[in-house]
Image (cartoon, rainbow, N blue to C red):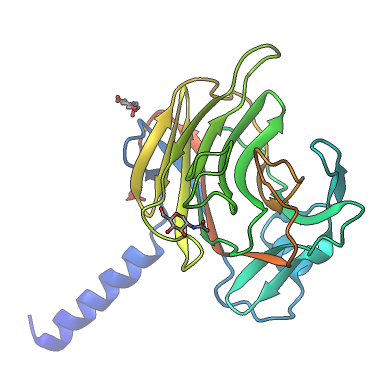
Length: 271
Ligand SMILES: *[C@@H]1O[C@H](CO)[C@@H](O)[C@H](O)[C@H]1NC(C)=O
Ligand SMILES: *[C@@H]1O[C@H](CO)[C@@H](O)[C@H](O)[C@H]1NC(C)=O
């Protein structure tokens, strides 16, 4: 083969490979696979662009509601979700000493059952905030990966340090199951990928592609949306706070691999 023909052959096969559709995305330690993948990229966002528009183009809706549990009621307010250069910011306002604590949240419009959801996030350096990345259908179908900015590296009186992995009870009277993974890095210093692989009977938790642990209790079996938020309710044994300075949590990208199948067929893309 002449080199010109050889190179055009390589180019042509590359083009075909790039365009080939994935029928199944496989994930390590997951039996079966997933049929669809969505990548939401905030890395090219610019400060001041319309967050509502960009999120809605990607199937995400910004929350606007009040939550009244805990010592201080809190509110999820659309204006506390904003685009900055290279990320979407979830803000918790500096608490003025009275009224609700004001936080931020967005949610997928799609509801799904089983997924591998990967959030590339940089934590706030302001104490007193809970940063959540979670599946939530209702109080009896919830899987959480949560960072508490008051207990990132040091225990508080009633909160051991680390990132919290939790499955909430599936019925009233049952108990939730939590694991706490100590940080081996400072999550406020840079972006890291926090991943939940939710499959039948098993939830596995990863950071930067490294498996931290798994939970087999309370695994939801219903479809629901995924949520990302930052908030404070002043509970000394959870979020602590509310923060006295404005807190900013940054999310650079979100990958949602869903439509679970027990069988692996067609063109397979390992993820
Ligand atoms: C956290 O604990 C370390 C020692 O383990 C200490 O050096 C550091 O000052 C503590 N940080 C805070 C914010 O208390
Ligand atoms: C879940 O983690 C435990 C250790 O905590 C391990 O023994 C078990 O093999 C894991 N299960 C799965 C399905 O990964």
